[in-house]
Image 1 (cartoon, rainbow, N blue to C red):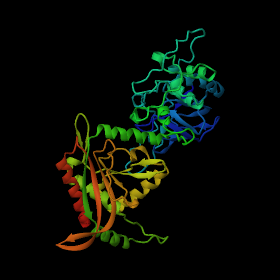
Image 2 (image 1 turned 30 degrees about the horizontal axis):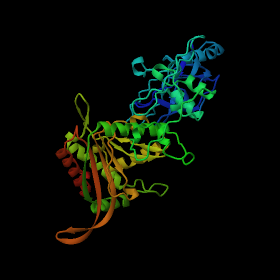
Image 3 (image 1 turned 180 degrees about the horizontal axis):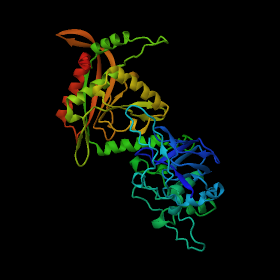
Length: 471
């Protein structure tokens, strides 16, 4: 029996993925554990392992294809002893109803510190572990109707009350490709929904509705309530280029909206004097042993000290080292801290585990490794998920002060500004000190104002007395 290979869900937020590269071609023999393909998610590129033996009978989705839905059929494997041509011939039929099969592959999880290696046994995922297949666009469109089936009468396009037209994703894509305004297409789907057939009729000369009138001058219209075509009506044609959102940008947008709509933020800011920290950093770096290449074995950054300070402060104030859930508070035994890393096209937050138990040198080495693999999109999901708090540092860009958005399910995030020399009053005299502002964003459901103030005061104490981090 042919074995269907489906697009896997490589992270909890993944709905679609890009099939970057096939490492097996049609006719190749496949053994359990062989790498079949490379899959790009919103955050990383991962290898896709086979959990069956056989022959690659048919590649259904070619490499380079973007936005392949989770659980969509991407290839068919002929089982041992099975006729390869027969298995390949059945691939099209299998694609029409992509039910999960035992041949579903698994993301390759390499050995490494802090990894759970869920695929090490190469065992197929159980049905309860697989996400349900997304609704097929073909079924939504009503494609494949019996000959002679009556076509419902066209209705005015249905909206959600804010001007957004109800239309299927396929209809929107076809209308965009044909440069047709979706609001002008008469819908014949359920309740006036615009479907693919309507767009095809419009392309072939079907009647189009009159263009929507532009908003009257002086009338304020909430931009978030407008559909894409209405927003574009504000700008002259040809005055802009449309750059489609990639999966990373879509996920970032979803999570930030979720954070601001569901997490009641409040913010606390303090100023830290960091002259002693800078002196300690210089002293530690100057004593670093040299390798065979003449480079120092390590080089600590200010951010490494901030990460350690936050980790120790969370452990000292355990009521802040928590995660909010509707049924109860998760109180963590160790400080796991996400670090915001800018990568091309977005942002990712690898998580340093057990910061409270690690040395500054270990933290520094882990962060350099995470940053390098993040920019190459080679982080594993378990390396950027979880954590109770995070650090976002924009000091290297000269930013003096800012507030960061909490990344669910974390409860706090520390925004770090630049360090600069300032005139200060010490013991009644004017002096020069190097100071840095830090701002703590807190989830008020889990951390109250006084508790947040205690946490940031503890962070400040460690930053201003860095030797306390070493004892």
